[in-house]
Each structure stands twice: as structure tokens, then as C-alpha cells.
Length: 98
Image (tube, rainbow, N blue to C red; front, top):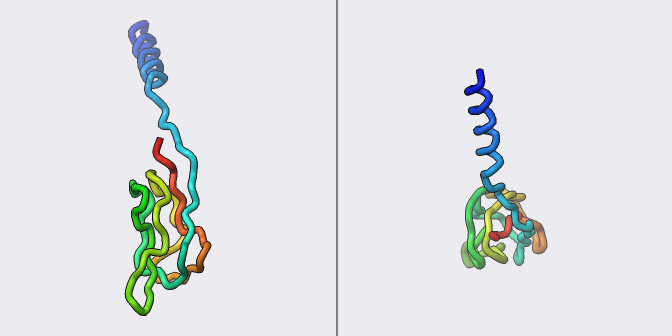
């Protein structure tokens, strides 16, 4: 019985020693051009500043509509392929890298 209590205490203490995952600030990523979404990033994707998050179709072909404003991870996607977006629409939310 005594060994069980010691093991339980050790497990609890080990859990407390693990570092908590720090969340960086959230950044809304807005479209700079509107159109029909041709491609879009998936939630959970790690991105670097300047990476294309979404492309829209134009007469000249697909063009970037949203680029990452900084390094981070995509936490939310607010558009889907085939959807029409407008300039200024929030298309994705990034969690900034620490």
C-alpha cells in the first residue's frame, strides 16, 4: 500500500514538471484580393512569414490571396475551397511562434 502511494505521488509530481505548451498571440490573416478559393491551407499546418495560405482564381490563373504575416501555426481556417471571399475577409487565424 505504501509503495502505491509513493508511485502515485511520483506520477503526479512528474506531470507537474512537464512544461506547459505556451500559446503565442493569435493573428487574423485577411485576404488582399477577392475571388473563388482555389486552394487553402489546413488547420495545424506550420507556416513561415510569406507562405501562401490561400489562392483565388483569376483570368490569369490562381493568385495568392492571403500570405502569412509571420511564423506560426494555423489554428483556424474560415474559408473553404470553392467559396467566394472578398478583400478584407479573415481567411485564417495563426498562432504566432514563440
